[in-house]
Length: 132
Image 1 (cartoon, rainbow, N blue to C red):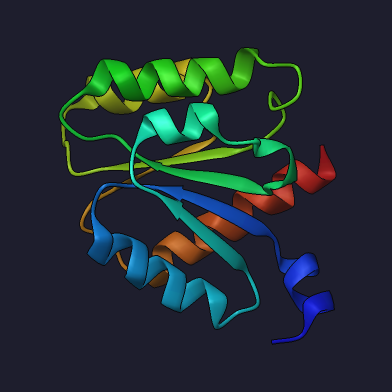
Image 2 (tube, one colour; image 1 turned 135 degrees about the horizontal axis):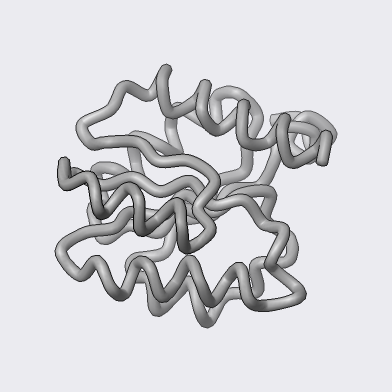
């Protein structure tokens, strides 16, 4: 893989307890030059240095409050407040989407999703961030 291409595409932290999601996301995005790192819990997100990530891709599962708290913590921190967050969840409850966006998430995808849709949303969020 070309190092310059990796840097140009972006470095993404994927926070999910679902190993299959991590493997699928990693496989797809690395083939397009992204660097993907996975962590198994939202607690790991708090403990990570997010300053070198282009984007955090975070799954919100049953513990919705923990996910909202993670988003708010990232956005309150002066070192990470500009790091875009794309949330995904299998929840179809509208309040999960609304709460995530109100907490500071930049976009939201409902699971199951196609990797093509996820890829388009990641590119859109990164484009928006680079322009901003």
